Amino acid sequence: MNPALTATAAATAREALDAGRVRADFPCFARWRAAGDTLVYLDNAATTQKPQAVLDAVTEVYAGGAGNIHRGVHRLSQRATEAYEGARETVRCFLGADSADDIVFVRGATEGINLVARSFLAPRLTAGDEVVVSRMEHHANIVPWQMVCEERGARLRVIPMGPEGDLDLDALEDLLGDRTRLVAVTQVSNALGTVNPIGEIVTACRRRGVPILVDGAQAVVHGPVDVATLGCDFYVFSGHKVYGPSGVGALYARREHLESMPPYQGGGDMIRSVSFEHTDFAPPPQRFEAGTPNIEGAVGLAAALDYLSGLGLERVAAHEAGVLDHAVRRLSTLPGVHLVGTPKERAGVVSFVLDGVHPHDVGTILDARGVAVRAGHHCAQPVMDFFGLPATTRASFAVYSTVEEADALVDAVAEVQEIFA
Amino acid sequence: MSDLRELYQEVILDHNKRPRNFEELPDAERRATGHNPLCGDRVEVFLDLEGDRVRRVTFQGAGCAISQASASLMTEAVEGKTLAEAEALFESFHDLLTDGPTAGARDLGKLEAFAGVKDYPMRVKCATLAWHTLREALRSGAGAATASTE
Image (cartoon, rainbow over the protein chains, first blue to last red):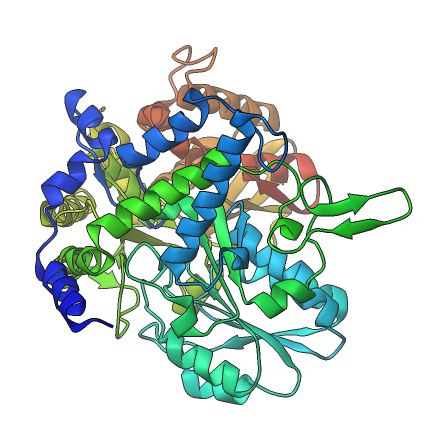
């Protein structure tokens, strides 16, 4: 790489993010403020707010004239196709994949995982085989594998987790065996905020020749991802958790896997030719995109990724780490507050419980003070079981989060304790 | 936004901290388990009858202050009631929480503390879980039953 360019990039990364300007890019905050209401939105691990650039991109898909993709010679169809395939190229670039053909648009991370479970894993899985997930997975990265394992008589095995909320990588080495057909691990835990040493995990799998899927649903929004460097076989993420629309996401897969995989669903747009006797399927990625896709979703997602790239992922990560560290530090000094998970590396999320107060009561009182958090099991019941808790309160931060908002959270938590004193 | 003290009234906080009739009745004639799959709250209700009257009702469980206090106050409210009276009380209580047709028509005593819940629609199921479970126990006849808010 050109050393001058690298130096420029580093200088940009050092320049702090202008949080006020970023916040102004997200119209919901101004709207709530105008209505005289406070919106301290700390449920970003559930879904993120959308910048104006995304709203405009989605509107433009229709305002400029709707067309369907990959068919018709008229200008509207051509326009839609270019926008949709352009979005695929944006995702490719964002993930650092070699080719846009390695990117499949899906409804979200969940569908990406289901697609891999059905089209990649199921045909390769026989009785006695094993699939490995981790103790900290979201249900979306457990249930699809469990369903396929049950059908095939295969066994789902689990990488254990320590009390701090870090995975036991020595145990992973022991779990990888001759019968392991796939490993599926999250890059960042949605319940604890743990950043897994995903490079190490991928290396361990590749050394044993075991394919690995990385769930990036909580990761892509918090820092740069490069699937080529990472070396994973599959990578999935959801648009709505990275400032894009809901109902769209992407699956990255190695070319040789996509070539070998049968279709996920049948229909239009995924075929080369059809007769009543036989259908020739289209090559990837079209083979996995039956029917008219979520065109405006893909375009909106691309606008979100462009927006985030424009801010600079390194700068975004540095800003968020500052806010998160502040929240973690202040929460951990409050008596009667216990952090759930104290991992070596953390991104975006802090989970906690209060002595004598149920998380749902915390959630209701915080909401009354304008602070939106998640109270519940976070679709990660095995994590809750591990800590012996029915639920936690989770605050999760994004690029528009501020230190003042972290303070508002902590002050509201202190008020909860007063009410329940 | 209504005042939080409307929701978290002293009587609710008190019954959350010191739930009444919080014990298992090992030889209960009837029992039912309730579960709110949305939030994971669980409650088990134990019931002894004398004819068609509730002689003793107890509960065990874990959940938010609203669900725990509601279960506790319910056990006090239905003791000595006939099955029909208990069912009618649930209807009135439900209407209180949802501003239903009979809301305000009848003084529900300590149960009135839950009136604030109607401003928090997401929490109505917390307040009714124990009551749904009681109703399952009442209707199930001898043995065990399950209730769910979903």
